[in-house]
Image (cartoon, rainbow, N blue to C red; front, side, top):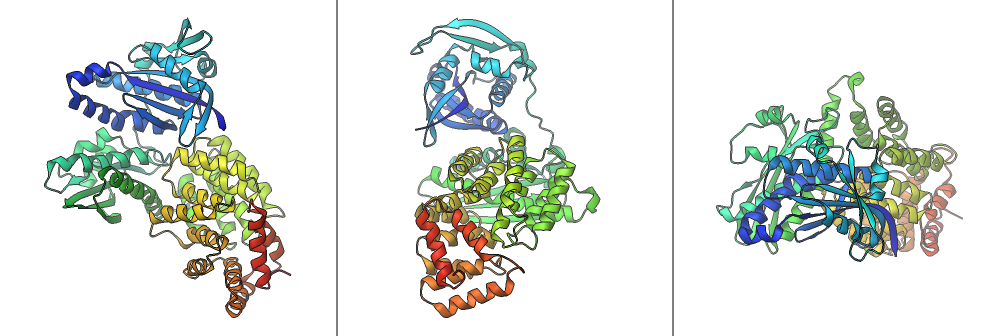
Amino acid sequence: MERKLAAILAADVVGYSKLMADDEAGTLAALKAHRADCFDPLTAKHNGRIVKLMGDGVLVEFASVVDAVQCAVVIQKALAEQDGPIKLRIGINLGDIIIEGDDIYGDGVNLAARIEALAEPGSVALSEYVHNQVDRKVSYAFEDTGLHTLKNIDRPVRVFRVVPDDIAAARPPSETPDAEKPSIAVLAFTNMSGDPEQEYFSDGISEDIITELSRFRELFVIARNSSFSYKGKSTKVQDIGRDLGVTYVVEGSVRKAGQRVRITVQLVETETGNHVWAERYDREMEDIFDLQDEITRTIVTVLPLRLQGAMVEHARKKPSESLSAYECFLRAQQLYDHTSGNAPETLELLATAIRIDPKFAQAFALTAYVHAYSVFTLSPIGADPTIAARQNIQRALALGEGDHYVHAMACEVFMVCGEHDLAQIHSDKALALNPNEINALLERGVLMNYSGNSKEAVEHLHRALAHDPLAPDYQYESLAEANYMLGNYEDAIRIYERWRDPPVHMYTHLAACYAQLGRMEESRQAAALFEEGRPVDSDFAFYANAHARLCKQPQDAEHWLEGYRKAGLLS
């Protein structure tokens, strides 16, 4: 049974039954719009994870109690300004919860629900634990409503509420694009099916993309109500860019014919109108909601990668002295290809990014990753690269506890250090914060493989890589390793041989695969390529032992060492 301490936000719609009785269709439409425009984006911006929807209610988990309270206040502020039919009660508790799959249980959850029932419409109620944690950390005032006896709670509970005037005066997250982040607006996809009833499907695709992109803290995403204002209008992207202050626009179309649907999506630079990236998806329309989820996941996994590529190209046109910290970070990401040759330049770019912004969590995280991975390039950075890796990842986590990328890199670092349980914790956090981010998805596959679940790892990695058919070769390394560990040596060889310019240590994996199949001539050829390209004075025994240390199960470690011995790389 897994437990952890978390802030739990429980919310429900005031007078939901009466609203449904009076106008069922209108209420459902208003609730859907509220979630798309307000609740989901604001929850994502405050690093919350929506655990489950319960009819008219919702349960959200936060790692930070400050984030939970600020999120609740700005949601109530936004609803008050809209003056629509949807009003919420919100209750927040801080407590121990039980985790089972994607769901959470326990007294901490139950108490949040009981406190929510005490809240007035449009208000935010807090347990005493929450109040004690956030008092003087947020700009809101609180009222003590006294002790309350709550159903199925064995002791009276003191409840506080946020002063209504402070909710009215709250400032939502800025909608002014941050110059240090790529800014993007997702326009309503065009329904080209000739069927007005398909409008909800095309709108749903756009809304889901907005919600999921909002999980990427390195992007500034315009809210739906702004980007959808151009729906049905023939407006130039240059004008949209000026109106919304965004650098990029996502536009697309949906065409349904019989039981097939074709969805096109383009990423457009607003200043020039140039198409940075475009893709077309053809699918069978078996289950419209599963299809919507699949398309959204695919687009949202690929889009930030294409956006980063466009940012790097844009940065190259600028004088080097004008590069921002984020652009330095993007250049480092693009440069680093898991070889020893470009590690120094990568670290130099990251050091520049950190010098410009000493609180740049992702730059510290990638620095930690480069140090950790240097163990496997046969040119380790320092006598023990894990020391620098640990120092940098701890700094990254201190600065970016709510950042999916930081936790994905932490997963790799702690795995290299042989701490698989700690790596699992950070992998879980990365995917809870952003289930679409490619680094988090791939690191989960690596962890599954080296924890002894190679079959599941292969299935997971195939699904993750299917989202990005243009993924760089090095992202297939983990898939090749998982196939080796399953004894699928032929499949592993096919993956290794697709690489155009592999890191030199890959030849040792290839030699081991051939040796396990008894194809010794080809194994010797791979070993010779390794000997030809290996760094001077490199210690293969150090590398082999470090590789074996990645494995949680002793038999998996021995499997790799056996392959190296058969290939003549180890005595």
